[in-house]
Length: 422
Image (cartoon, rainbow, N blue to C red; front, side, top):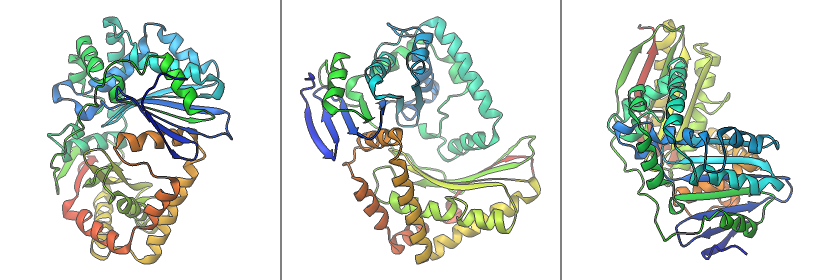
């Protein structure tokens, strides 16, 4: 038996959650039909918590833990799972930093050992910082050379100029160059603790066995320490147009607005709206801007909810001669949805698309693992798949009309245009 003396509840068939006295939350789902396991550790510390002067420190720390721990060299970290056919990955978002492994079920003990090494026991040496700083600077250069990524960075900065959601997750060359080992050690000490973490595992696993493995890694020790406070919301800029001149073959345009947070029930309606507007080849924007008018190759829309807010965005890449026309047509379609809402047929099709996406994701243990963690990270009650499908089915025409009128009017949109000047 594990030494996790917290409260364990069964959330669904073969799905369990343990809230530990020290604040750690462990969620697992047994999928007996697979021979693999996906495991992840999420830390509630990321770019949204950073002051401007330390922009990029969370991402740099995520990189640096892979340079060596108390028990493994950088090469040993890389080889530990790959040599057994598994994979190891990490990412920094606006609200969380995550470390994830996908392995054969027999290798779950090794995966949790490696993940714990990264989160709890990194060396964070000065010499490693200098090496990894250069790696991150090259990553930043890659964004500068990738216009469809760069336009997103510029858009975030434009809509939230004074809020951490507007900061680059990677930081800037100046902020990254100024970071010191002490900054990383302080962030690790203040953010990488059990009560600020969520551990999720999905696959051919047993909940009690996962708790035993985590107990052996000393995840249940220490006193109660609550998670760090979440990111505070901030007003967004509406109706701005930012034009950035670059010597490119295309004009890259991103326009959008702030919307609701990840815990807001209106996100289901916004997901339906974004599917109709730009969620695939059948969407309005793809059919109108690309298929009917031939103004672009790539165009899509999405809704992304964060802890403190959300965003609805549209991206298009087009020739300089057609950029104004493409933007005008996008705004026409947004204005039409804001004015008229959605007809019943489009609403039904969008619901079918979203429900299909939810169901198909169940075939991936990594997707299931992420689903387990998300409801905890967003402080939401767990919803079964059937309940999620009912949430999608419950979106009404009246609701999408209200959301369209409230969020999609063109005068609310902030836009960034990157490329040759008109």
